Amino acid sequence: MKTIDARGLSCPEPVIMMKNAMASREAAYEVLVDNVTARENVTRFAMHQGYKVQVKEQGDDYILQVTK
Amino acid sequence: MKNEKMTIAAAGVLIGLIAAMLVFFGNPVNMGFCIACFLRDTSGALGLHSAAAVQYIRPEIIGLVLGACAVSLATKEFRPRGGSAPVTRFILGVFVMIGCLMFLGCPFRMILRLAGGDGNAIFGFIGFAAGILAGVVFLKKGYTLKRSYKMPVLEGEIFPVLQLAFLILLIAAPAFIHFSEAGAGPGALHAPVVISLIAGMIVGALAQRTRLCMVGGIRDAVLFREWKLLLGFLAILVSAFLVNLILGAATGTAFFNPGFAGQPVAHTDGLWNALGMFLAGFGCVLLGGCPLRQLVLAGEGNTDSAVTVLGLMVGAAFAHNFGLAASADGPTANGKIAVIIGIAVVAVIAAANTFRKADA
Image (cartoon, rainbow over all chains, first blue to last red; front, top):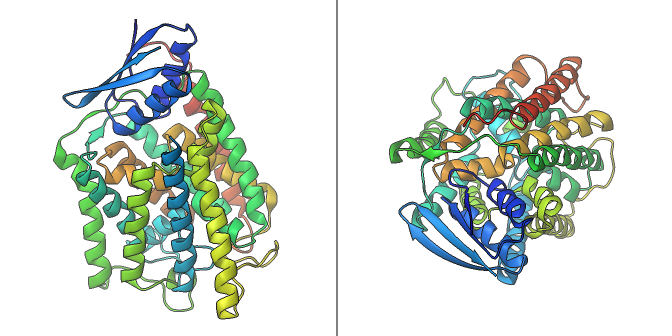
């Protein structure tokens, strides 16, 4: 599983990171973001690519479990 | 996902309606909203520049920030953040404004000018799209202004509170605040304060919920084949156009006047309309959003966006103090030089933040 730390970054950067990471077609990713817009945009992008997304809140951050 | 698209389309329709109605209530023609023009007017009212035609504390700006702030507090999205290259953002803000004042409008007003039949805005749109594509090239290669960090709540609250201070200055109207006199120019044309303020708050709230951004539409479509934000852009265009037609039929005064010459607060120099918006589009991609989006983010406690807005306001002051802003007569020589310098500076900022050694 690949971890992507996009905390502190604002869109479109987290989505670009997700997109680049998905080039290697892993079965699962963990994405860390710290704002709602990034959470929504990464979720939307991953779902368009055929992944499922589960969101957990940890303090001020969101942890997105992205799986096939 | 379908829901999201319905929401932003509906919000766009409402925003287009509000923008067109603001002209009916007294704003300059095709200028129901213009973030660049309105920040410029506010800069003038504060005496940062002394162009007598464009001085007024625009309540729409105050409302946009406060509307976005209120919604973000209610949804717990108010999260003070900052520290992502604030000085770079300030400089980008200055040059985005210089580009906007070459064209005579921000991306939002560009849509409204198209909806009002102003053909010059087509050239602006071509430049704008090209500027966004230029920015996207760098984004794809890894452009970043690095991370932002958590800031104290007070730091995030300062910008919204500043808007309250502007509101007090607008209402109290002390002698040191400058207001364009009747007939002096666009600054003297405005809807009643209450209407402008409420219109701003509604649009600020809608833009916060939908993440509406004039730059993000084309950017996301190119980068990710994601059409959501572009849908908002198009909804505003169609809605403002239709409301202009309805207002024209209802009042007997045409609100849709197709053509190039004699368009309100516009000039016919296609090349410089395009280059001005190229600078604005390019700079805004590097900033992560259009001037409207920067106001909304500043309302959510994003202090990097607050610094960007201050850059826009200072850029407006430079534009009028140094004779850079275009007028209905066309661009100025100084303005052309400033736009060229701006494109060069923005390109250097883009390259320097794309191809650097991993230092952090």
